[in-house]
Length: 325
Image (spheres, rainbow, N blue to C red):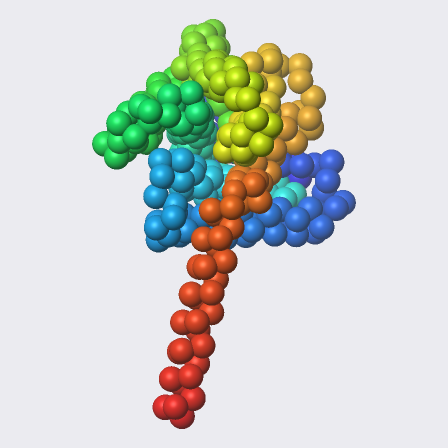
């Protein structure tokens, strides 16, 4: 698809290039992404349903897991459908307002996930290091406060970036060499001074990425110290199993996030940048339910019970239909 050049005063849409290097393989690539998207939505909606209905999954850990699953569904739904359109068309147009909306909602969801992962690490810290205070501290009111504040702060922090992006002037190119509208892509296309935006991005990285990451590391250092003090091997293994899933998710998510946003953007290989972005936008939401389910007996047993109940209801409905006919 040809590169579009327009006057800065008439830009009303952007051309998202997507993955030009994979245009010869767009059908298999499209099939893989749409399969991953459908699986991600189904898996995470199943987690939300289990957490909402199962009496065995009423603890704060599963409460946070349900909200993490909700944020994963929102994240992939914001990015992936448009990305599929970009892949199949070998590039696709998106309106200026649509691009800003995608950027803002994507930023809010990613930020909320960072805060939710931090809340989950604090929950594990209390459960393992302060078990006697766990119930009193992690009350219903407190856990709801953590989740609500995660979303409220996310909307407020990303609003700052949105205001700055709205003040950016574009000239010449309106081509986004990515598969979605990211903050750095706006800066790349700008013909105005982006010093303030660059500074703002670095400043916001502290409350959004760096502080939650350091907080999680600190809590896990305390957790590991507590685990190593447990005298029995079986006790250490059982205690570690309660937080190992969360640790794996944090490692994958923050590993890709830190690579993308804390290493200078300009001069990067865009192909590498795109595929790293795919990790935390597409792959991580797909793996989260699998990681938590495979390593958690309560979720597995609740899932089995849920499937049995659904099958039983289906048989009852089928039996009634047969009687009516």
